[in-house]
Length: 332
Image 1 (cartoon, rainbow, N blue to C red):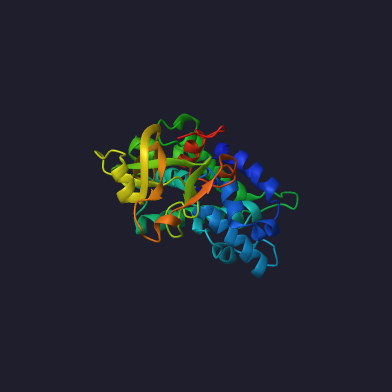
Image 2 (spheres, rainbow, N blue to C red):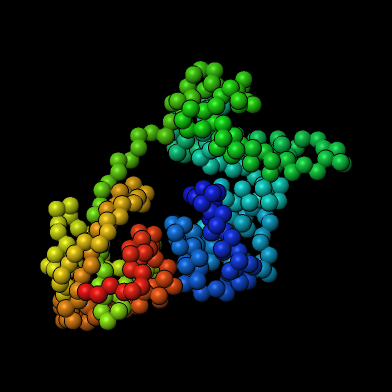
């Protein structure tokens, strides 16, 4: 959950999740719909699917016990080099390096690295520094009374340093415990490091959705496998050109739906990666017939009452549309 999401956002989701699925076994045996519903609103839903598959593998290959060695952790679905290193160092105090955005910022400033950290050679150089740090911490002599988890503390300290002190804007250098060793501070280069290169230009996209009622039930569809937000539910929608209008012809051509009495309901703006998306939702009346005679037209979705819609896992934007459909149901 903490991949690409802040702690303050994760906490309520974690509490709800662990209450519903308190063990590896319960997660492995849960229905995919249950997993997605618990994850609803966190975004990047491939993480939930990977977590589900990982639990099943842990049950099948590791007797239900989370693996402790780096390679086995790395082999789990959805676990990359950083996540595996974080788990092994923080949970098991092993000398495995980590390199997230915060640590990259600390290391590029500390060592004055001007090359783009996303470039392969520079990235490997940063991994090398991170590995040297944690291995040094692990090799420090200890007394019998000293049970400090050194690798865990070292890696967490690097992340906290980047999160709280060595921030992207206006770093608090005078409070930094390593400022005397920091090249960027000494050379007044903190504003230019890390050098992440030019930002990818945002692309505007516009979608039109139709909220269609028939006898107190609303038409929704489930997104197919292999696409963004796979298996989540949404109201019928299609991408539109900026100048397009949500007409009956648009619904006929894009969605094979014969609609009438189209009126605005809500406009939602949100972002997915580099896309800035505008979603315009409109109420509409189904005419009782399909726009085409195609056999696929009648299987475009399913009809649910509002109460049952709330049991499904929706994309975040379409969940906001659903919030406009509280009982009593719309009448079109």
